[in-house]
Length: 323
Image (cartoon, rainbow, N blue to C red; front, top):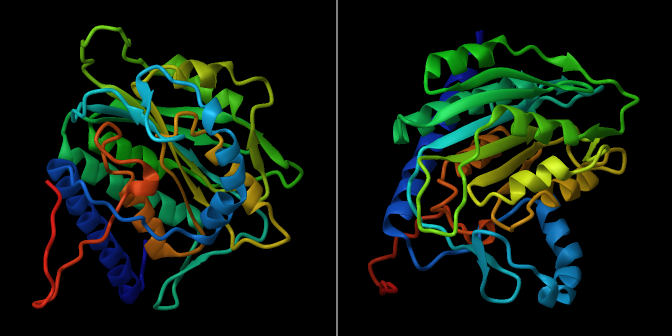
């Protein structure tokens, strides 16, 4: 429980901002705006893009066509599936570990909170907002422990069940000797516990799509495939499966491996259709980035083209629109 009323007010303000972004997402999806601006990104992502740009340019001609996607301009991959708001089956993969000397989030009031507390908070708001958009969405929860994973909640549209499961999650101390985490077990569990829509060459539309949202919070433990990535490839081959990731990390420094972890997470974007987001110890940006994942995977633009700003022209400015 939070005793500090000012801290409560600030967190509630963040929740309202979260809901505002939800409204913006609905407007953008419904109107299918043709003009989109590039969203300002944080330092780790900017550094990553700058470092990988030459490689991407060199491999433009080597991009392979994926099932359910088509190649357009240069290396951009665009989904060739119908832009329909199908019900989602969302697996929330939450890292419940705590690293040694973990830095806390600090609000403007001076109150401080552990990352696990705020992660559970933004997931709670996400589930509530997503359910309001479509009552047919279902949610499941998987946790990342120190060396293993646990499937703690099966798919359900009952929000109370999901929230009760979130409340029951207990932080676990991370083994300081671990410098990598095995992602293979994550995707093996996804294959075991999830039903994937079948993709056919006909125009038959499935009744749902499946999305996994990985919330990773280790700054000194790199996620890797220790025992092969066959399960990841099986999931990636299905165009109705989407993987998003949110990396909640320590302030980047020479003493941690934030950039290396982020590079591995971006490598999971096999079809260039995922949203890979990251945030340091900024509570407002944590809420904002989780809100960006509210958009439906079949209706949202590519991450690099997404715009979350509404520009209101002044009285002397001329308004232009693309038809």
